[in-house]
Length: 243
Image (cartoon, rainbow, N blue to C red; front, side, top):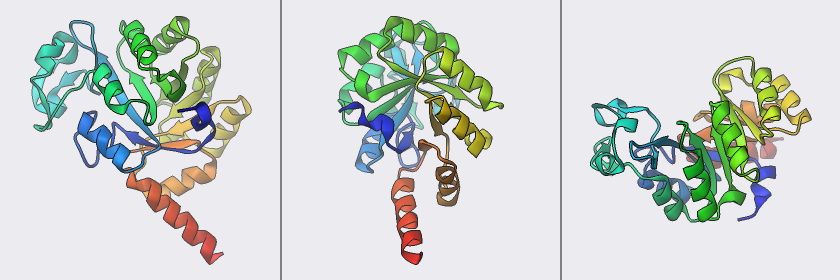
């Protein structure tokens, strides 16, 4: 896969097709591919034995009614846990093997001290050209760029003002900022684009809301429901027909 995705609008499957299958699992990623998402986003944490594993929360309470923390468990122990009683927690390596260059990857790194392992796997599976590593943690992104400056990075934020994070992104030589949709305005997008940064926002599942942000000029939308893509396309086709 080439780097053409960097110039296209993307509907990004948030934790896979998480409205249809347990989030951040192989089943969720397969479903996202089946539903023709443009990209897949997922979260990476560190197991006790230093292996990058794909899970969002720092503990297992929400996904498995288990109070233990991910960082306290080995991969072997984590493999015994079922996400929402159904699917196994995958390692990053298993996810990269499964996706095998089939789509664009938004890899959110949650924990420090796994940057080198993540970079090595992205390189090993030859997905540098179709990946962006994203994080709320600037130290993680800085380390990623130090390890391999060919890897694209993006700055996540759930706080205003987004302009501060645009400045962070420039310092980190990032490709994008990824603000929560509540803080996205046309002015934010205009400023980011003026500084050659892409803007991907999250998490939107409603067609009318998606159309609003597309109108603002965002470069992509993360969604739990990959059918958002076809529903937006139908709506815009209908709007053109009416006009």
